[in-house]
Figure (cartoon, rainbow, N blue to C red):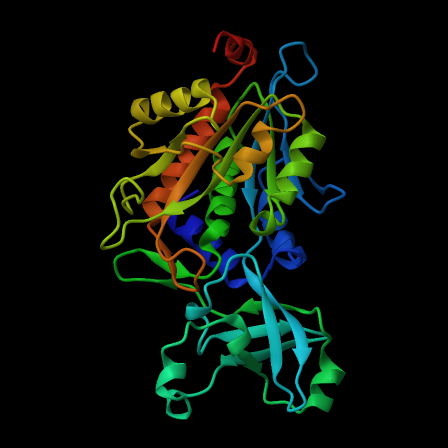
Length: 356
């Protein structure tokens, strides 16, 4: 797969809505891509998408299994009240900073999709004291241009709300848009599946597109328990460099995927990833994480008796906003490194983990 095709896949994934708890549409889109490169695609009882790629050792005593975990849900909101004038009050689904929402276009997923905007009182109508107050979710409302009666005919309290933003490719090549956290991880997994389509590998590979990560790693918890793979690699995003932030907390765009290190990560897996990156000349950045990574890697590590886990992350600016930004070189490098890792793990490697 060429980088341009991978970019197009990411743009399409980003543009589609899939708020945590309402991911069905974008899951269907991901399934369409995985079907081209894997042997079987299905959903589990929770709704996670599982694309299976059979290994050369399938059905033998040498068989091992690898799960590649990438969450597809995005942050969003939910209708809590329809005001007398037709305005909607709402609450967040996942971590949203209210400061990023003023003037934002949204889609309310009612009986049919309804486009609206998030408004608030204009500064001209606020006192000086009110202008200095912290902006909170309860100060905001959604305007659909409808009366209360019209709104009641089209939607209900509890309907999901997605942020509306068309992704863009900037002149520098960088991509910006909503839900790159973590459609970027899903795109990297699709790239990996495409790379492996014509190659031999010992391991059975499960590409797991997980749900509801933004509200508690729920899809990864259920998938890791159900599949019980020998190994797991989660792919997510991490914080990209910005002015005024410590270099130890953020990572450069275009300088490579990050390889996590720390108690959430099995040292043999991170060691193999670093070794493969050096051998294949794939740029990477080490990312020390001293506790839980709060990613699907954590859910896998503590599932059942414990699953050896690793974490690859794509540097991303402006996380949990509609202008998240990444560099496509990091995306391609992540997919390439994943494919080399998948081809490298075998029974001998898994049995050697007991030595750590």
